[in-house]
Image (cartoon, rainbow, N blue to C red; front, side, top):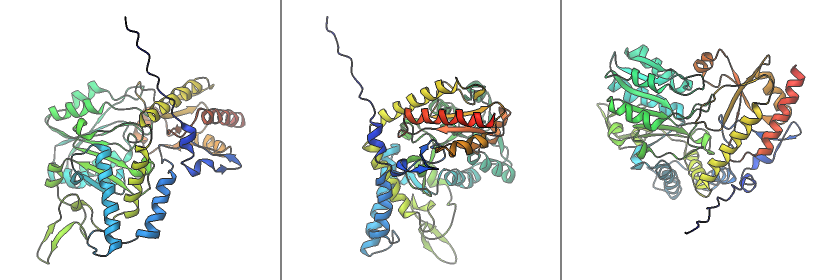
Length: 415
């Protein structure tokens, strides 16, 4: 008999990683910063910060058509960011990677181009009950202007998408399913692979809002076979103002451009204009050049990490925080799905979330309070807002201890 030695998985070195993030060593109100607002935006590693300084100090020039050296260098670095995104998502081509200002603009781009040109009155768009406003409002606008029908898949008490209801709502009239990969308000991870397969079997296309998922797990758009995937750089340790829409090339080719101007054209006369090739057809005007370069720096940084270890570390943080939360008198968790990303959303009997947020801030702890741009799903729980602590791989168990100590003090003050 052969005895196999168990494979030992090394612990994720969070202390070493924290050294890469300068802001984590600052103080707020005389206390060490405990940053637990990562679902709103993530902090930036030194590599990303340095990339922004380096661009403006040594590369600053407009890109693409310039023949001078600075322009060519800036173009190469910006387009290098597109290739980094392609690799990160495992897209088939850089032609399928459109730079936007963020997830919101990416979703609006699909609504204003694909949906307006391909859908007609009576066609149905299917979304989930726990969607961010950015994945609700564009489809309401489409409904109001074009007569499409907006249908909503409910979630259960745990915050999980009701897949039986999803299958029942799918019909030959369903032309587009727009669904969040991870809920920012609840942390629930939706079964997007199953959603894509079911939607395609019904003849519908699928847009996935990946704003909350890209920092917390591997995303492979080829394996998912989704038609569109959107995310924001600032939630992936990159700069604000830069985001991505992935789209299958055949769909992007068939879609009209959204905005007109420089870079999205090949030729212009007063009689007609001819559109540029993908991906530039959807990138009118000077883009966020520094942002694209910074996003590449963020992706390059992530590639140096043990990302699987980072995911395990985040899940351990969530489990620990959940265990601690269940022991707080009067605390109610909002979102208890079996599959969750690192989000802890809660209310405490008799206490307003904003009051909790202010008192936690006085102790150096940064959380998010309010409706989290997800009013409909909070309304489903009879709430107008929650307190939300959200974790990243640079957070620690000690920070969670600090958070709960600060929460206990806040509860004492507000009692």
